Image (cartoon, rainbow, N blue to C red; front, side, top):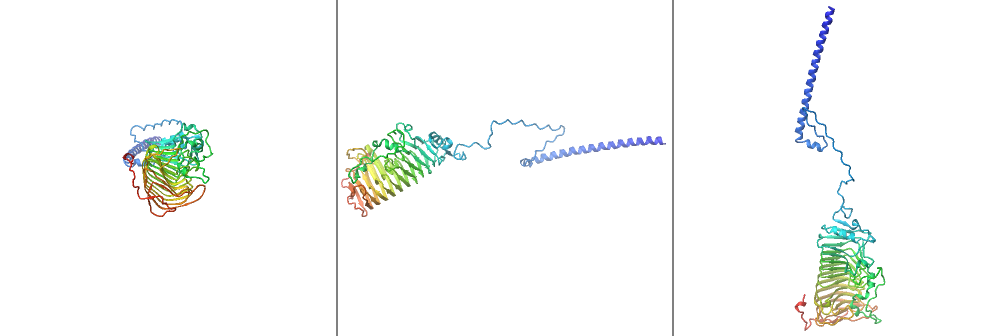
Length: 524
């Protein structure tokens, strides 16, 4: 009984164990099937979300869901190949272009970035050429000559005609001319030249220094001289045929006889010069030749009064010119207006020392000259040879017409009002009958002091001046070193619209009775 009971118990235990094992396998199988179904469901949902919002999750840093795997396990993610070691560090931004401010502006070109030293000794001409070549390609670009540097620059031309328009030459430093004769060769007519450009501006607070004293000293008697000196007789009655030359000479070696203009503009449209100072030019300081649309304002010319032929501003074959708000001190005409000029307006200018503001000289070597529509007003002249002047050579042709000189304040000026149609800057000139015709010349509100002669109107014998008008002239003598003279007129016709001081009774009222008419080929 006990034996059977033991066997029975053993058997029952075995059956119970088998039943329990079977239930465990069934449970595991069901759990595995449910897990696989959950993975398939999740994968399906991921695919649906990927069509709409999945990309948004990527932008927010979410990881891309793995593709479902039914039969085969997912292949391992391939390893990225190692990145090659760079030879040099690559900046995250493009390299800067050469230009002002370390290339922050691609349209600004600093000469220092192109190799200029600015130490006053190293020749920086090539650096200036390179900076200009780069700026020339960019419309409305700027060439920068920075402050606190002194740049030694030889003769150079900043030229078109293929440059882009509206380039600015920003001059805040100092540019000096070479101190020896070698860079000048046999002689060059200009030092710094801008030619054939459309819209060029030279501006800033900088200085152009021609260091011209050596030029003035080396060849003083080869240059023409101002013929109005013949009218100025010292009290000791000794006439100086040539002015004394400066004794300064900072250049080494004899300089060429051809002297350069410091700054010249040729064949350009819409030219502006403002703010800068031009000093000690070997010859003319600022010249405009064949230009149209010129504006000069708030600039300075500075040279000694005894520096020969150093005109302040020289205009030739240029139209539509405005000059104002400037200080001009030199050894020749503060402003010289030559043939081919029209529509010139000059106002609010200080002139002196110098030879005044002149139209001419015109008609030299039997040439034709045409000048018209010139206005000079609101001028202060201090210690100049002439005030306002027209000068022509015998033998010339053409005309000067439509000229107004108004509100000119003169102080210790030798010859305030001058027309000289017998101008000659050589030792001798022959008499000729042909002349440049002068008409429509008005002088009004010319006031101040003179030291030689208040009015000198010397017109052509064969072609008298007509239409000369004098109004509100008040000039008082100031005895200094020269003989004083009364007003002088010759072949001058026109009218006095007010009483004058002193009386100018020599002006002939009306028109000449037998005024010769110019031939057609002589008329402008």
